[in-house]
Amino acid sequence: MITVSRIRLREIRLPLKAPFRISSGVISDRRIILLELTDASGVTTWSECVAGEAPNYTPETVDTAWMAITQWVAPRVLGVAFEHPGDVHDVLDKDFRGHNMAKAAVEMGVWGLAAELSGVPLSRYIGGTRSSIPTGISLGIERTPAALVDKARAAVAEGYRKVKIKIMPGSDVEFVRAAREELGASAPLMADANNAYTLDDIDRLAALDSLDLMMIEQPLAWDDLVRHAELQRRLETPVCLDESITSLDRAIDMHTLGSGRIVNIKPGRVGGFGPSIAIHDFCEQHGIPVWCGGMFESGVGRAYNVALASLPNFTKPGDVSPSARYWERDIVTPEWTMDSSGMVKVPLERPGLGVDVDLDRIENLTVRKHAVEQ
Ligand code: OSB
Ligand code: MG
Picture 1 (cartoon, rainbow, N blue to C red):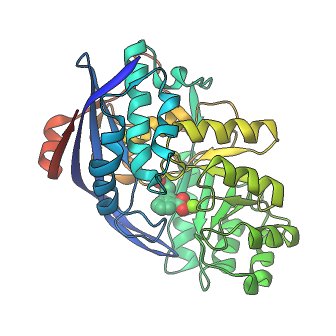
Picture 2 (tube, rainbow, N blue to C red):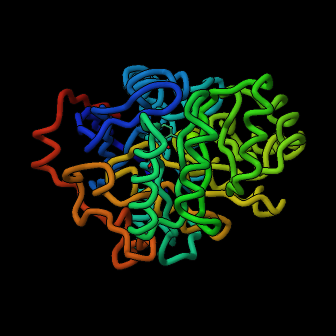
């Protein structure tokens, strides 16, 4: 049995090393909600909410998530004796629409606590089998193809096993083609449009077919499955869905409709580890590869992503870049690192998350705090 008796929230500000442009906006200073969960016996762990500053990725934001966690999510979980963390998602989903990132922050924290209490690493607690994770980098939209090529070349030299290029109308085919020409036929390239296109752009998207991409991520609207199916019928490049996969049912719909051939699983977007594992298992049964997406998590959220990506069907490199890709200094010790062959180690030496939160550092970065108790 696992019973959460207190959830402390705090918001920190963590500046990215460099601003990052995607088709729907720019990210520079991350506002991150961290949770510290304590169980009835006094054991604690940390989790992170991946909601963004603005509602340009999903409808959620840092501010809506703060409200949802304090008013609805935490009160539903506090004091409840769960037999297994896999039971938390259903409790949070009943007659409570949306707010997946707020729900996931608490749900994943319960998985973290359970691993800690069971004395095993989070990866192994959820059934992970890998000891290291193949890693990709996500490159933002640059002003010129030449600027993108510089970044892509450096990424391949660092060892990254997948280079994801953000695209939008006006910065697409010629940018990706420049990277392909510079890096050669074998470079593992993909594109991510974050909803920047419609079916009217089908010729432009089809022009990417000649560039031999691993996949194109979420070209059409964030909540669309029907038009993605039409697009996938007309593209050779596999479509990978990100924004559209908000639950197991949406992954099943993707498979039924043929809206894509690969799934990006972000545990925050789907409401936590329970749904993430269910989507992983469904995709495994149906021959659909998955990989773990990123939301510019701090080292706390990264611990959960690395654990999740250690499940067997995470066969494509994840957006789980090392700490130094994002931050001058992360908030955990040790920081997350990647070796020269693009692998991030799954921490297997100790129970739980495998990293410690640097308390002095987060105190300095904190802008607000709140505690919810049973
Ligand atoms: O679409 O995958 C995305 C970051 C914020 C919002 C959406 C996305 C991203 C990324 C970043 O691509 C990946 C990372 O964390 O390295
Ligand atoms: Mg994406």
